Length: 239
Image 1 (spheres, rainbow, N blue to C red):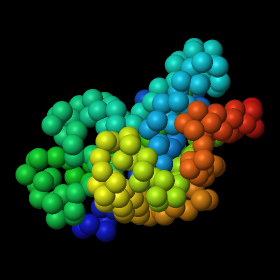
Image 2: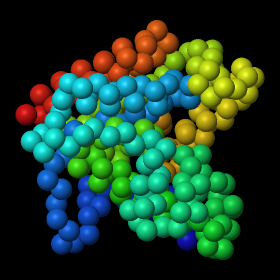
Image 3: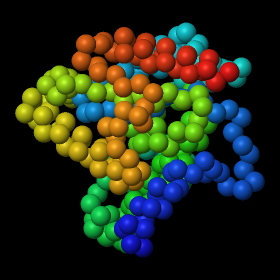
Image 4: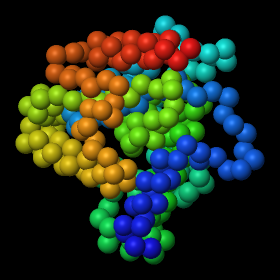
């Protein structure tokens, strides 16, 4: 399959409103869900953890079955692998900064890992399933594009000034400022490429989000509270 055709298939699949097999039971709920896209070093994971803590504490967005709010960040890939019965060895081949096209085709041909279409498709299916089930905070993986038709969803983009993000990255991952600067630049470039190649979208387009938040001057708790308020307003508007 030609690379361009493969990407078009990915885009068509993830933009579809129906991932479900014919005859499969429809999900009982659609959301609520929060998706978080982050510039590297904007503290997406700490803030996402705080969102879950606050939501579990105040009961926001809970329905009658009281399903607990759950965070899916790095654990999302493990969920994809388990849900689609893939070998555990494939966990490392679902990066947002995917392998190069040649390496991807070779690896797929040798059976070393799923190809780009397979990995994006299965990730998108799992993300949508989690979002429709509800009470999920999903970090990365183009979650806002995959779940854009879910009414009770809040899509957040976390940003910040480069120097503050580098300092935060160095502190969180215990690396030097120089190492942090290189990794922040690499991750920003890789995530932008992942979204552009698989969704034909610009990760930095503010219109793709309900809320774009500069985290420079907000604590994790304060940033999380703003996002929870946005969710509460979205739920009220959907009723």
